[in-house]
Image (cartoon, rainbow, N blue to C red):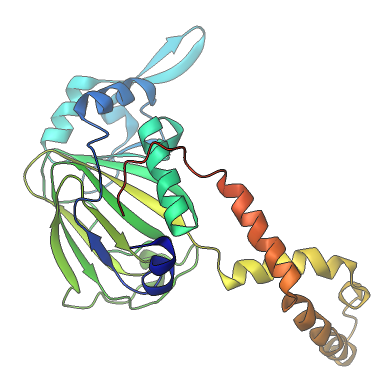
Length: 289
């Protein structure tokens, strides 16, 4: 599927499973072992979950190096917790892993959005996070082993940042729209707001959850207001009493609508978004989306 077709037919509209999307196996257990040496076992980048988040002292010791206190992974306790069914989450993995950084940049180029990656590692267990939705689109990239994924239609479409399933509430539909096993090399796209859960299969598994952040109409409106209203005398007027305030707002609205509808301003916003994404990836692609 070409990027343009994906953005027109799939992005924010429906779930999509792509079998064998990875051209190679870019990450193995030795790579993860090296990451455990690189990433300090402390929040926000390193988190371990059982039924609830586990405190750092459950799997790490405090040490002092060159006069600086830091945490060091207690591998015996960490491995015991993993074998008991805990899930390791490495947040913002693109900051530490060239492979994750490359995958993020490829997804960003394909989807046309900013991306970031979290790694999820388990040795088995029954799953940690249950049914939930994310406030960003997700590309689940299975790197090692397999997991069962169940995806359900949204009950609160297109949530904004902060409108999580825990805060908004509501019920997950009873029947999934997709029930599949992701195997190494597969990629699953889930739009924001779609309920889902990933369940271990009793084997060691590693997947990347690449979050794709689509700029919303609200993002543009807030950005455009910040650009235009400070220069507008009507916007700078004080709201003194109820009658004058209503008249002042009514007087401003046509000018605000004209500014928001200016294609030049929208193009400037889109350029600003594109600049934050950085250059396209070098010719080292590992995806075949």
